[in-house]
Image 1: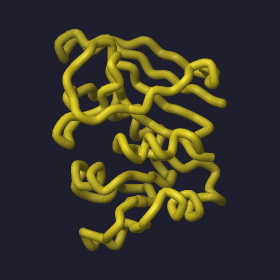
Image 2 (image 1 turned 135 degrees about the vertical axis):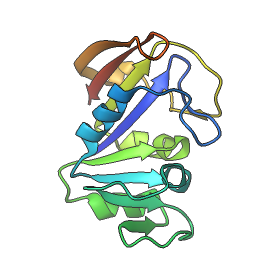
Image 3 (image 1 turned 180 degrees about the vertical axis):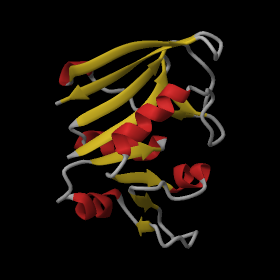
Image 4 (image 1 turned 90 degrees about the horizontal axis):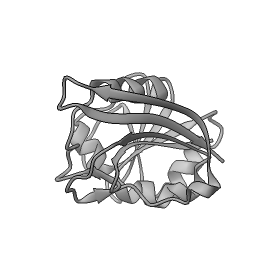
Length: 159
């Protein structure tokens, strides 16, 4: 099964200048809990923004060329190659960025989303998806009062 995990604002922003424009520690825990011990698929820019392979996960980076030599990273040249690599896994998680999300959404059976209840400026977007094609199977409302009173909610959608 292919799943996508992302944190996005009301206007679908997921990043700016290869960074995330907010800091929500609970979202980082949500990310870790839902990706640990699973293969993760990401684009080169996402990998560069993280800066290192994530532990206890198979790190698969989609890029036309191998740029950084890490033993813990599997480099593939296309999303099709990434999908073939994980076809026997129970679940593989796509972690970004915008272009990879856009290409992989059609293959996804599950979305792990953190909806952040504000709009902001950015240059990277999560693809707009038709909510009628997805069923909400989990939702948890949250607030982060330590960080400018950010309201957000976690959601899992399946199809």
